[in-house]
Image 1: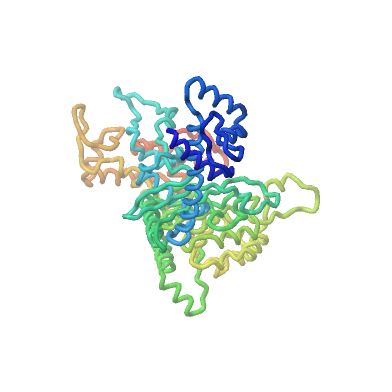
Image 2: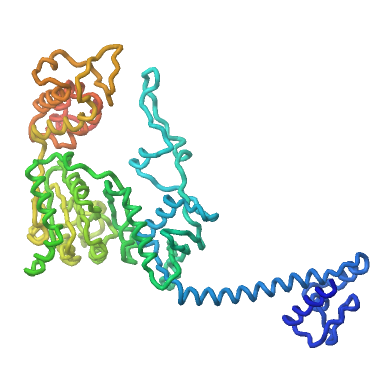
Length: 566
């Protein structure tokens, strides 16, 4: 024991030189130079010498031994930490590769989702719990929720209640802030998450730190970043694997975020299933014309063809017609067909300037659809009257000339490779310079529904609800029907010569279209009527005449625009 004590004292002497050998023969351990571990500890711990003497006299226990051992461990740990820091720095500088990803870029979300959902961070004991926001489409696919029905066992209506929806929602677990290690494809990776204040990055300047930015750093052993690149590419593929049948809608970010530029200028606001082209109520020839034109434009060889002839590689479309005729619907269907995101710009946004509009277009991806809705009602520069501000100013009156000038200044049409779609209800109000060739290369007219379109709209509404095989309605019948008809099949329909339940739907649709005047109602108006009877095609046929008379009165100004409850 005495030898161990002398050894520990020697370690302390090397860390705190005193200039003399250890005496060790009395309770004060006085050294030749007047210092000892006890006197040194007395300096840092007042009263230590008295405690030491009491324990030594009464119990024969020299507490200096324990304290000296702890001090030796502390010194050794400090030395090892310093050595490890130096070695880790050398290893990171010369024997490791790394790639950094900012939370302003989409890749950040791809990596986080990949780590959270595929690997579950099973090797990490430090996780961050998040409540992910979900769209209505994602809630419909919740694995933890059983399918809801609208009727109970007795056939009575069951009112759905979503008060405990949040309790059912599963949290998402992601790596916590700090360092994490994991294996992927035979390679050992280190992941470091760090939060950085935006205020620190822009150097102050009086700007407010309105949001923290996160930085992800991926590193691995080796002098090449190929392994990290493969991981990132795999994460992107994993993310988009569940988005192949989705259309992503983006809008400009808030003004405070737009000023930093980059992809952060746009934020995702929605993600919905791709809209089938067959659901767009438009003449088939016009649909095919637009589809073929965009398909040729997006072909990679087309860009080279344009460049060889010195023609600007751009394509603009103007969809015009009454409200509710399918202009925006066609845009979403086109995005689904070609797998493009939609970037929507509202020209009524009061904070949007000409310079920011140009910046937004500069930060668009190489392939996308840019949608400018209702350009006849909006502009970028408000016309301020020289007199005192009036009530009309609050209604954001813009003139078309200023809008055209803003488009010229923002050079909207000069960004090549994107599909620009503008919609308007009143093409006659547009300045010719705004829709000249070079800005608008293809004009597509939309009109109220024809009888053929009305019939197609009806059939589309009820195709999945009526069975495809003939059934016999009887009290004891059992049939696998998704949504059974609300009324029995009539003898009249059975004798119409068509044969089969699908033919009955065609017959109902034909009779329905005959009762709706052609080119009077928009597809949206007809669809609104059908949605209130979405499981009752026969009821829709019975009540459409009364609805038409009421709507005719409203359009002539003798009816009311509300209260149509059937």
